[in-house]
Amino acid sequence: MGDRHPLDDPVALELLRPALERAFVTIRSGVRARPPVEPPPSLRPFLRFTRLKGRALAAVRAAVDGDDDVRLRVVEAVGDDDLGLAPDLWLRRPDGWEEALAELVDEQRDADAARADDKAADDLGRKLDSLTAELERVTEVQRRAAADLEDVRTELATERRRRREAEERALEVDERLDVVGRRAVAAEERANTAEATLGEERARLKELRAELAALEAAPAPAPSASPTAPVGDEPTAPDSPPAVPTVPLAEMGEVIAQAAAGADQLARSLAALTDVLGGGSAELGEVTRLSTRRARAQRRRRRPLALPGLMEEDDEAVGWLFRTEALVLVDGYNVSISAWPDTGLGHQRDRLVSLLGEEVGRSGADVRIVFDGADVDRGDAARLRCPVAIEFTDADVEADDRIIELVHAEPAERPVVVVSSDRRVRDGARSGGANVVSSEQLLRHLGVARGA
Image (tube, rainbow, N blue to C red; front, top):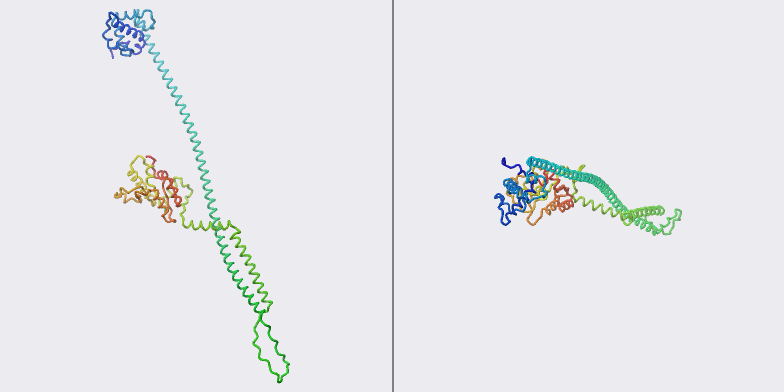
């Protein structure tokens, strides 16, 4: 590097390029002339080049500087052509040409550096403009996202309020149905009692009327003998039968009239009550039937646990449900694939079982995990000591179907919690009165980042 000629500097060579290219053309033309002119030996490797680059330019510069005959041939070939100040100084070499050429090289170097700085500044300016525009775009996206998030939160709060109001109204309707149902049952009992009483009163009225008719049809009693009748040979009348006590007809008629009036009043009351219970109020009859059917269904159907101040989709609901007496059914692969999608199924099962075992140790929950397929690790002694129940379905049974079956098979008085993000499992669990939480809720509760 220390022997390098000052004019072999890239800036100098580029400044001298017009003279160097003309020299190269002149030397190559001499080779083709008749008779040919021998070129400098150092240029032979470059004679086939059509475009001179750094090393070839330096070789031409060295050949011209080393042979005045070659330089003069180039000067003659150039003639009066204007190649520029620097090429002309280098070829013609007037007094002081070296110092003048060095100054031109320095000026060119400074100009190149200034252009490079300007270009770098322009590049930085464009990059800064681009970054500023990108920052503004990202800021706008964040602003819109924040506005959308606020809208979603508002909608969620509104939906939760509406849901609570709907639940409260449903409870009020349930209570009203219960009251109407009890009233309908009581009215029906009163109607049955009134009907029985009416039957008794009608029977009694019939007996009284028969007795009155019998009394009215009986013959009047014979008059008794006068105490002053003469006593002689006239025969005496035979003794009369003993007198039968009788009820005065007026009193008997009054009793019958009162009984008839009571029966008529009771019949009118019964008719009015029958009208209310029957065709006179079809809606009440329908309410009674619905209330009765609902009461029977409620005795048979499980109801989800009411969460104290929480919604089912809240993460805090998972911890609360795990501390109840509920049976917790976990859709195994639905949870594990969400948590560790890039690992094998066996590794997924082991991690899920381990985490749920720790949760059972903290909360005391009754947890059962259901996986698809046969249990390939049935002989694992560690798993046999795990506090979590593990079930593998038969090869032709899906875990989804088994979980829904377990929900409906559990006694109605036992609460059930199902963990799954599968829509079919969630719908089937809700139809069985189970509480439902998503796989993502459980993973957040266990402190697992999705995909970690």
